[in-house]
Image (tube, rainbow, N blue to C red):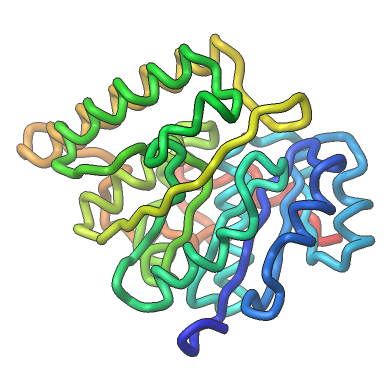
Length: 275
């Protein structure tokens, strides 16, 4: 625990068998109370490795996407009565030793969420980030800061921590099951006026580290532009959007609840197994 708050780390996994053990062992288990892994049908030995390490593990029968994986992760963390949830990628691209630092920023109640930025110290390129991704990250972050009225150094890191209140309140079920989920979530936090803090974090790009290809990067980039513009239109009361809805049916607590609206029902709910 930190500051009397229960800390749960979630590991959204996809073919992470080769890097999971190192990631898990570098977590500070003296302060982290629980670890949960969700395998998105990667088809490798991730589940076997996780069980060998004693990690509570869940598996999607089908590959549902990075966003869907996070929805399962956060739901399971809240079931464990987490006060602070830290998402750590088990591919070892981000340093797991910083998980406690992120959790502390939220457990202190100074921030509602915290992210580990690869852009603060300027080491992203030295860590192997492709130049086109670096330039796109900078450009998209500048655009989002203008649209959202924030001053973050990046919006695209996958290393994050959130308070229980944030995970319970945001309409996360309205978000994409793909990579744009991350960006939609930070935009929703802006809409709810939650405070987001940052720390610096080195990054490592190597064959075992997950990375989306050029096509999906371009698709993600357009998704970021669309999300930012949608926020501005919503803020100006020109458009409404499900991702800014207050509907309780779009919160994680309704993950398994039946709904008359087929769009609100997650197909993944029936495909999750506890290992």
